[in-house]
Length: 99
Image (cartoon, rainbow, N blue to C red; front, side, top):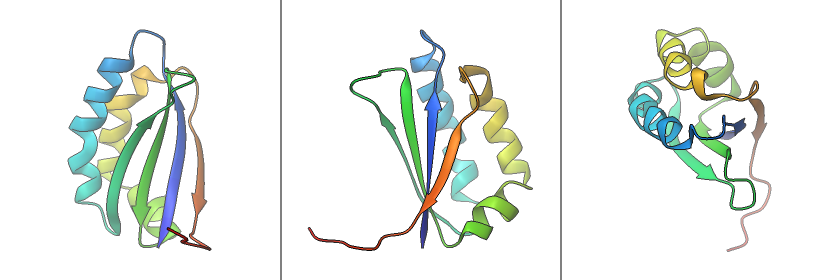
């Protein structure tokens, strides 16, 4: 299991529309190969910054299968107009689970 963590800076004033677009796009993730969960978090200190956390079976499911799919194209169509700059994306894996 891997976690995609995307840092998304959103155009000021577009936050509500962006959140609605992510909600609309969620089913496209849900039907994608290897996608197990999707969370959207908003920064308290920087309200126009969001963190998209997606649980995947593998990096390949995200970077190869999802990125080459019509679902990814729909995701970008819905949310792309709200980006203030290109997203930053990393993959992580759990190395300790203490609580």
